[in-house]
Image 1 (tube, rainbow over the protein chains, first blue to last red):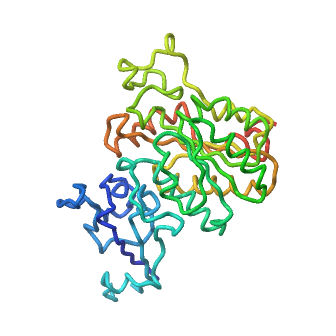
Image 2 (cartoon, chains in turn orange, yellow; image 1 turned 180 degrees about the horizontal axis):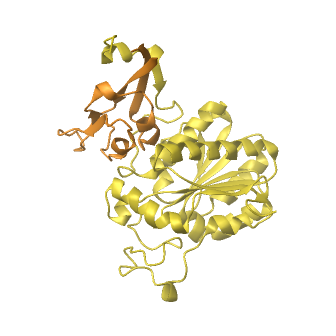
Length: 76
Length: 264
C-alpha cells in the first residue's frame, strides 16, 4: 500500500514556541527545541522526523503560519 | 520500509502541500504566542487567495489587538474608529458594491463600544461579512472585564470573578444578531484544533461567498483564547476555553440561509 511520508520546515525565527502544533501532531513528531531563537522562544522542530506523514495539521493550527509541509508517496 | 526516504528527498517543490499564503505579508505578527488572531488572519488570507479576490477585497480593522491587521494582510484595508467598523464597511460596500467587504472585530470593539453599529448594520442587512473574535476579555488594554466575560471569570477589573448581580450578564452578541431579519448567515466557530480550524475556514469562505447573493449580512464569531489576559500558557488557555467558554458559547451554526437552525 502506498504510504505517505512527510516533512516540515519551521521558520525558526518567526516561531513563538506556543506548543499548539505539538498537541496537534497525531504522530508525535514535533517538540520544542532546548535552544532558543533570537527572540528567546523555544522554537518547534522535528524531534521524530521518521513518523511525519505530512498531514498538515501542525501548519493548519499554527497561529503565525511558520510551518511549511511537504509530502511524498512512498511504497512500503 | 523498502524505500529509504530522507528529508532531503521529501523537501522538494513538487511535494509541497502547505505553505503560508502570499496574501499574508512576511511581517512577524505582534500577537502573543498561541493567540487565535494569527490563525484567524491566516484563514481570511487563505480564503481570499482561494477565491482569487485579493484585488477586490477591502477589510475594515477594529481597535483592539487586531488594530494592526493592515500590516499583515496584503489587501486594501481601512482603519475604523473604535467600534465603528460596520458603519465604515457599510459606506464602502454601498459605494463599491462589487468589492468584497469585511470587518474584523474583537469583543471589546463589536460587543461593547460598537454594539449599536453592529446591531444596526445587521438589522439593515448590509452585504458585508463580519468576523467577530470573542476571547471574553479586553486583551490589548490589559485583560479588563468585557461584556462577553463569563459569569465568575476573573479579569483585572473583576479579580474575584464576574458577579452577575453587580456587573450584569455576559452578552451573546451572535445569538442576538441572529434574531434580526437582516442577517443571512450567523455561525460560531473556534480555531484551537486542526478540525475546528478547517471548519472555521469553511465558515469564512461561506461568509465571503454570501456577498455575491446580496441577501444580507454574514457574521462569523470565532471563540478564541487570550492566554496573556487569562494568565495561562497557550495550551492551558485552549483547554480552559473548551471547558469554560464552549458551554456558554457553543460552536455551531445559528442561522443558515436566513433561517434559524433548529427552528422551522
